[in-house]
Length: 134
Image (tube, rainbow, N blue to C red; front, side):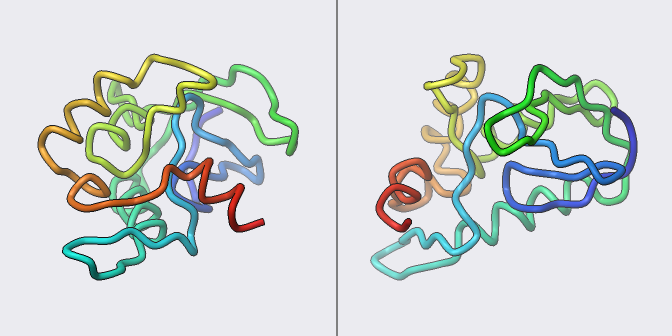
């Protein structure tokens, strides 16, 4: 799947009307708050904005893996040769979603060590936040 992508949230895009969930990562939800020095900030919204800035109307190529229970295509996506999934995790805007893949664990460790993105403060992992906020 190739084309310009619209950002749905920090780990979901759409190309030609097809919803694509970035495989192996999990970004904060749109309404999710993180905390820096005890102050809340909209980290889910910031993750989506960071992804939108990264994609910036460039051509995105996605390699589909399968479909999830919400009928989204699970894929690894690229801008040129750069893995967008890995970029999001390495920049601290998403976590390695270990329940589905360990591919991005090293990228997460780098982001944590360098206090990038959500790692500059405290947060609930998105999968826990979703469970608590159903």
